[in-house]
Image (cartoon, rainbow, N blue to C red; front, side, top):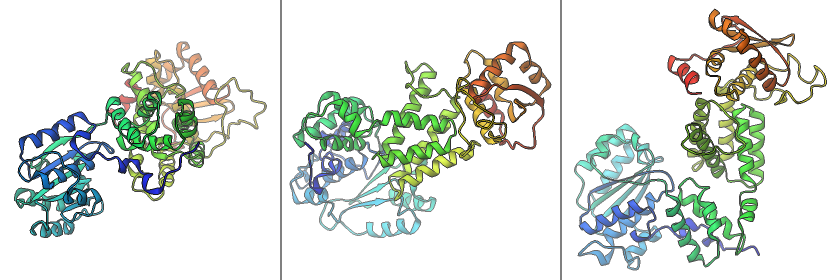
Length: 487
């Protein structure tokens, strides 16, 4: 039976935000907050740093109640959450607790206005609390204004600065704050949080299902509770198979297929897969996070940090995998504040394809030489354009036997130019490279790999010097070394 909730109960993450220090699920953060209470001393400024969804804002609000709770006038303690002061802060109506989004209020004028307001004493609380979220977004001038405030803070004010990017916060600001580091939640910490939500809702979710949900959210409490919300909507005693099929709708398979299309620089297919995912109800944030998790495991397995790579993902040079992870992460960070998240993902896909020189809308090519070619009209010399040749060349390098170090280094510095008369023309930089590639120990293997990747048997010829028909991006020595020795 499908369970229906009225609107006010639907956002479980907001409903079950931790309201006391004891409810904080990150062990080290909980211990840090308990030390503040035990010391019975409050600093004038705190800096909460760490990833999204780790509980920074919730902890800041708890601290605001700790210092203002009517029952804590003589000594700091847990907030009672029952007095009028606590209730005002919990409801978001407290005029003396000011939350500022630095992404929207980042200029010098905003900081000057803030400084003017701080001169006024709290209207009814002991402390005016300023919670500045994403503080790293402030301009240089705004940071300078904030610094002057932190150097000479009014006695009745408390600052809690929150950021996901500590490296962007000036050291002069950091040095004037007590820093508390948040981090991605462990599996045990996430399960503790989810069990608290499940128990409060009075529903039954098996340990197996909770364990599975924990693996899908990359250490984010917010994302984990959102998934629990979806599971609760399915009804009581939902088994793992139904959770995977209904909540995620086969997302693992879809994500792997999308990753491979990106690694192949197949922009058209990548766009189609995202469109299908959205039509099937996928949350794009989870989709991108799942993709990054899979690529991460592939990367770690290459260096033997993880035992097995995710199944189904094509082998790629390390540099390509790292670049794709960075590109996806950059987009995932922007989705929260976007009115059109699907458009952001589409732009990312197109930019990836264009930056890598792929042919986004070229004719599809067979992926294996075992696929039958009935005539030249299916795959002809003119079908494969120069940009697509580079994409296929990279794909070939990614699937080569890793023991072929010398050959891989030679091919990584070669460029496919064109196909004519069933022959692939490849440009190399030096006569020595040409001689090596034409040697019997390399020639047959290369032609075998070309046939497998390009989908048709081709002779391979090498010529010294670059062709004007291919405009390769400039590359520095470090990039060359990375491709030769790391990939």
